[in-house]
Image (cartoon, rainbow, N blue to C red; front, side, top):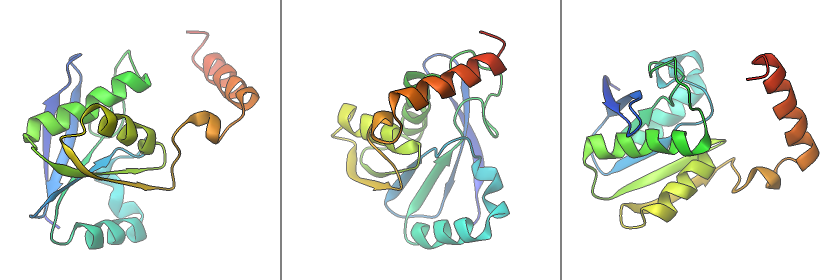
Length: 156
């Protein structure tokens, strides 16, 4: 599929890269984890699946802040901030009604967006995801992960 990379800016001033392929009813993919749509070709099976899913649709993908083609140096990588990324893409495209697909770590963001914007989201598709981190990890595991990240960032 032919794709054009576009950019928009979030409410907190972060530049977000996104692309639109195909024509038809829009399907927005809530950015899954820390991967870039520009690297979909690295996993041909994933790219093939997206091509099949995108047939007859306008497929919208974006890179979360701090990843891929989006602004890399950002101070806020919180859950609330990454929700601003999705909101900016939808606003830039002036979508009135669309389907929203949340997979892996993009699922909670898709759920939150759908709750906040029920008039915009016609369908919510969830695959391989969860509603809350505590549905997947125990509190002890999350504390351990936070401790590792804090040490890696030098206590920031």
